[in-house]
Length: 320
Ligand code: 8YV
Image 1 (tube, protein in one colour):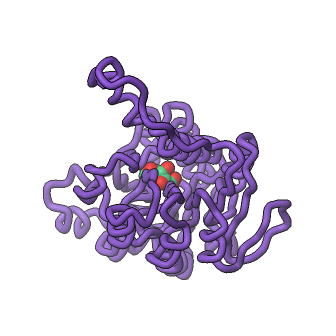
Image 2 (tube, rainbow, N blue to C red):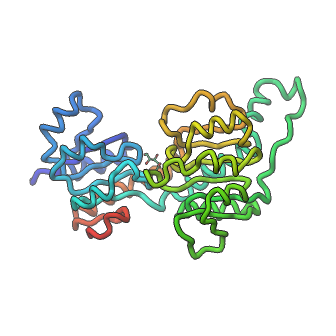
Image 3 (spheres, protein in one colour):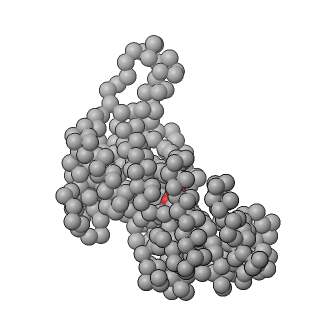
């Protein structure tokens, strides 16, 4: 039997993914190697495929040690941790997992909005702590009905969030690099859109182009009654400016699934009642992660079959 091609796994995978990898590849797990540099020096030339995720991408030292790499399959839609242009220039195909997580991530965004607006976490605490019996009813919350919702990034997930928001009779605005052929209102100026919005939901790709897009000006435009939701990447929001605005009462509240230095989260945010924090769980359900895992494996299987992948990142489409 011919030797199976060698695959380097970066980050964690499900058992189901592991079984599929092992059926087709000789699998090496980067984080199991006691001496990463020695492992890369010894095995690097044999590795033809990498399986990674949106968090780890392909670190520079790994990329430099894999001269025969042909395909990278990433378990996630966001691929800002991979230098896609640089990798494509070397003729390496990069695949990701678009679409299969649109509903889940949109649901997470709506969940955070509802939780912040309706004080879900303090309400739960009100019951558990005995405050309900001792103090009576809680202060009133803010309705999610009939709000103006500004969506930052209007790709597949952004448009799914817009559909969800419409169920709460929202007026939906969006900001993206260019206007799209959609019924929602386009704002070329993000600060202007924030000023018009009650809720700002970020679902734009991460990376240098969107770093700190949500800065102090945008936050101030959203204002003391406004709510910021981030299900994109931590880098999209200037976290220090966000913490300052929240602590000074210049922003009403925030629902955050992603952070600049995750899993580290600023202590100040953990103390705030008007903030809901989740540990990057946008797509983290059994069902959606299974679909993402299957697509990650399907991309690799396809590559072995005919040298293409099913869902390449746009930078690599020219390679197929
Ligand atoms: C994953 C994500 O958590 O798809 C993405 O871009 O952020 C998440 O679904 C990420 O890929 C890490 O596994």
